[in-house]
Length: 232
Ligand SMILES: *Cc1c(COP(=O)(O)O)cnc(C)c1O
Picture (tube, protein in one colour):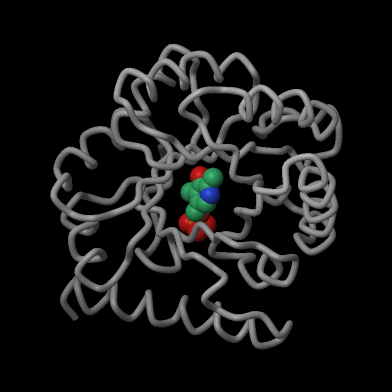
């Protein structure tokens, strides 16, 4: 099998999983955007994916993302930044990221705004919310209680568009109840910010549960590209 054939097979399998998950809850698959997470994989894979019809790619490390986006600059791809953001890198991310999915604290709003304004562009923002029990170490995302303040800060910022929420299911837990909590949190956000309709949830292992909970974006890496090197 060529790499192109491998990627085509992975994509077909994931698209069929999305279609089946949508059918089970009577949703239109057009309402679910597939973001293929290309972290750790080379720009050559991004090119093949674009050629196979992928329109959205996700990356989680700034330096790697910046280099890959430059190498693929002529492709019409929407780049999603999905990783932990340092405030001193946040402005630079707006050079290539069309969507920043991992905004989890108000400290990021000023540098993102500055980056977007310098480049004269609008950046779509998702707020990353933690679905972990309070106090668990090591997983990213804002506490749900902090979302109203964070949402207001993004909504008021020039050059940033508040689009919705992003979350990762807690490790070692059934993703379905976690995504149900996420859907309830999203519902509350929509009362205040009716345009924030995007819900990014679901990865290779739990995209069905995310689609069932109303995800509009799924972020899928290994099910399309194969397994990543174990060490980051
Ligand atoms: C790596 C990553 C994904 C994709 O994970 P897979 O299990 O390979 O599908 C999705 N979301 C985030 C935030 C990630 O870092």
